[in-house]
Structures are given as structure tokens and as C-alpha cells.
Image 1 (tube, rainbow, N blue to C red):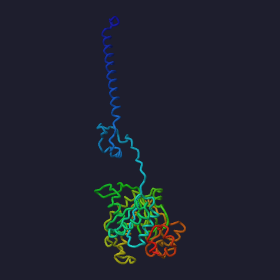
Image 2 (cartoon, one colour; image 1 turned 180 degrees about the vertical axis):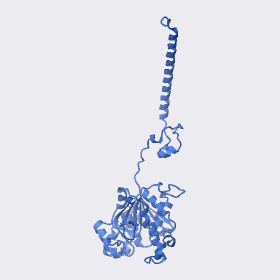
Image 3 (cartoon, rainbow, N blue to C red; image 1 turned 135 degrees about the vertical axis):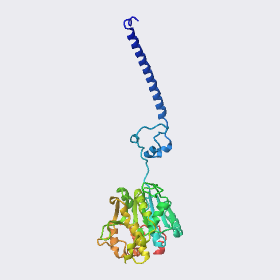
Image 4 (tube, rainbow, N blue to C red; image 1 turned 90 degrees about the vertical axis):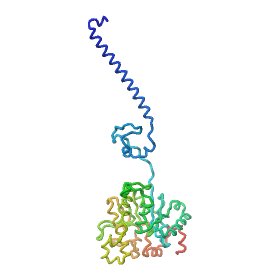
Length: 376
């Protein structure tokens, strides 16, 4: 006490401050130890497995709470995005068919031999009344081409919109596409098991192996790629991509579903009244088919950004004569010889002309088609 005799009050005051400081240091040490211990324990907790399958935005919508019920005070920006799921792109081929003749069956067969190799699944979409024909056909494919046959499936629907109806039924009724909004029936933004789609019909015969449509779709990151296209001309306000063979991305086929598959059952008097004055299409049957073509084929390009739509081969010559007519055989012949055009039409006598003048072109992709012997 001799050191504090002269200033006892001051000395006692300093001692109290020292004691208080020591208490605060001890409390802080205990708090740090406890916080570290809790942090180590909670860091070992795992998220529920189902949470890992949700996109970040879905995790946020679960509530601002973390996995253990703790309040999550971090902003959405600070949440690390999960690594992208690795999956290979899958492709689906849908062939709309009306196999009431051997030639049409040969056309479908040729596509399976020469166009279908890169597709994980193939659907033959047919009218219900031709189910027996298609069932026998698929059995023959499985016997002659088991690698293709193992990926082949027949689906059958009431056909009221020609090829478009059969494509749309396979896409929607067949549950190929999952709707983004079930209530509004919209598909853009929805999901599918597949990433790429090829829609073809049995009016087209393959004459050599080709995967150009799928390759171009991927390379150009396109929404739609058509085998043939038409440039602008006097009667069209925009290019036209022909429908016998078109490849779509997932987004592209969802747009197709929203705008084309959603159309009501078309009646030319109601939906295409201008055809009443077009003499070229006489009779109700021709007007009806023309109306369906206009609404489901010509108008398709309007639903896409122009830079997302591509065609591989020009479908006409300088006089806008089509390659599909027998009277314009030289147009197709030049496409075939100069550009290795991989297909031909079988309608309006075109098949018979090619069969007579260039028989090998009709046999390249039908090597395993057993009915040829009956047709020769």
C-alpha cells in the first residue's frame, strides 16, 4: 500500500478498470471458442439431396431459410450457382406417315436407313386406321435393321391436319414436350427429354446417307433448319422453308407447338376465305389442303427471328419452278449431281420418273427393303 498511500482513490480506481478489462477479455475468448465450435459442427451438415436438383431461383423461392432452418441473410447475388449438369444432347425423329402404298413405305424405310442413325429415338406417327400397316412395317424393320428397330416406335392418332397434325400429336399427346404452363397450354420455356428434333413425312425418299439437318442446327445454333427453302418472290412477302424435312431446336419446336399445334381444326371457308377466288385450287378438298399448308407451313417462319431460320438447298430455279415436279426433273437432277442433294419426292409421278431414269437413286437407301422385288 505504500505505493498508493499518496493516491489511494486513484489506485483503487485503476484496479477496478483492470479487473473489468480482464473480465471482458475472458468473455470474448469464450464467445470466440463457442462460435468456432458451432461453425465446425454446422459446416458438416449436408443439404438434402433433392435440393441439389433445384435451380438457384427455385431454392430462393423455398423461403429465405437455409437447409437447417437458419435465416439466410445473404443476397441472391452472393449465392454460388451450382455446376451445370453434364448431359449429352439427345435427338428425336418423328416421321408423319400415311403408308397406304408400297412406295410410301419405301420412302419411310429409306429415311430410317439413311437419315436416322444419329437419333436416339424414332417415332412413326400414323393415322389410327393404318395401325396394322405400320405395325407390320415396324416388325420388318426390327428384323432387317435391328439397330434402328430397337429405337423405333409407332404412335397412332386421329389425323385431321395432315402431316402437321401427326407431328403435333406425337409432340403433345405423346408427351414428348412438357408444358411450361399447363393452365395456358404454353410450351416455350418448358422441358423435354430431347434437345433436337427432326420432323419429316413419307413424301420424301432418302437417296444417300445424310445428317446435314442435325449438324447445321447445332453448328448455327438455329431454331429451324429446312432441307429446302424459297427466296422472296412476287407472291411471298418472306422466304419459305419447305416442310417435308425440318429440324428444330428445343426452343424452336416449343415455338412450333405454341403457334402451329395450337391452331384449331382449320376450315378453309373460315380461316382462308381468300381461296374462294383462287381458281388454281378448285374443289373443297384442294382448298382445304391449301389452307392447311398456308397456316401450318408458309406461316411458320413468321414465328422466329430471321437469323434463327436456315435452309440447306434452294427449292426452285431462277424462274421459281419447283424441284418437286416431274416436269422440272432437271432442277432436281442438278441439285443431286452438283450438290449431292440427299433426297427426292415420291409424289405426282416423280418417283416413277426417277425410278426409270436413275434407278440407283431409289435403291441406295432401301437395300434392306424386301418389297422392292415385287415392285420391280
